[in-house]
Image (cartoon, rainbow, N blue to C red; front, side):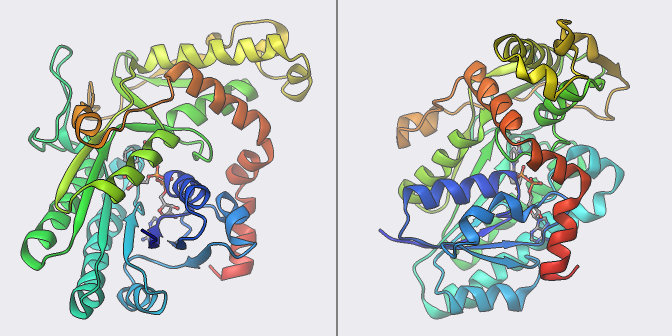
Length: 365
Ligand SMILES: NC(=O)c1ccc[n+]([C@@H]2O[C@H](COP(=O)([O-])OP(=O)(O)OC[C@H]3O[C@@H](n4cnc5c(N)ncnc54)[C@H](O)[C@@H]3O)[C@@H](O)[C@H]2O)c1
């Protein structure tokens, strides 16, 4: 079945990967990206799709009801894949307001636009909402991973705003008949991730010889999912899940933060040992002098309310939809390091705000 998709947050990390993934798998489907281009969104992530015109890019806010209604009608869109969010827990602790605005109000406005267009005009549709394992709270070390029926217990402003948006999506399904699905997934990593999140931050800092900040004792545990596996899971759900269902999506790769950072250091050291030219490109990296990058690890004061462990049980995805993660963590980390090495211009421009200046010229501030 061909679809006409609105991908919100399509210039962010996961949304951009999803746009590439879907276009590659289904080149005849219509895709419109809607993104406000906050600090986390980069047109460069999707320029290869949008510049040739295969995909339409719209700079705009998901809270703009008229804009969303107009896009749904004029482009005859039948599917919303809702990634747009404020997504960084540390930022939510400093300033929760933006998280309430984008994650809760933004989701409500999108749902209202879907009601106004799809329900009023009798359009067969799907609203797929992207959520997180953080809505379930923190797990004890020996507790079973979160299943879809685990009670919600969000503990950061970010997690609370995502939990609220999940409830709104379900409520609009129950009350008004919006045909929705929800996926709650674990920590993603891979290409195009803004270097404020743990894995790209560490890769960039290792290459630059900068400290690798690790919160507290480093023993907080996360489950890691390669973004391409996440994209394939979301496609599977949109195509095969009945409406009204929630799916947990995990990578089956639990690691403590300190073990993850050590694994990244070892993988970068190996890359430098294999390729001597890296020492010339990144002379400040310890590996350039034959030293271990792990010496950059620096323990810092813990984040307030830092959840100890998240783990996701994806058995329902595998039993009912035949999906399981394909990319093991060691391979995924090696591939991600290779991507950051191959795309030095991308991360330098992202970090220096160079793309932002260009976007402002093209689209206004
Ligand atoms: N990254 C992860 O590990 C992870 C894990 C689980 C769930 N999620 C969820 O996946 C989704 C995408 O996460 P990400 O890591 O790609 O985030 P991201 O921060 O990289 O991207 C978010 C995108 O949303 C856009 N955006 C923000 N506010 C907007 C608004 N008001 N209107 C339109 N666009 C707006 C930004 O410009 C950016 O392009 C989020 O909903 C997040 O909660 C992420």
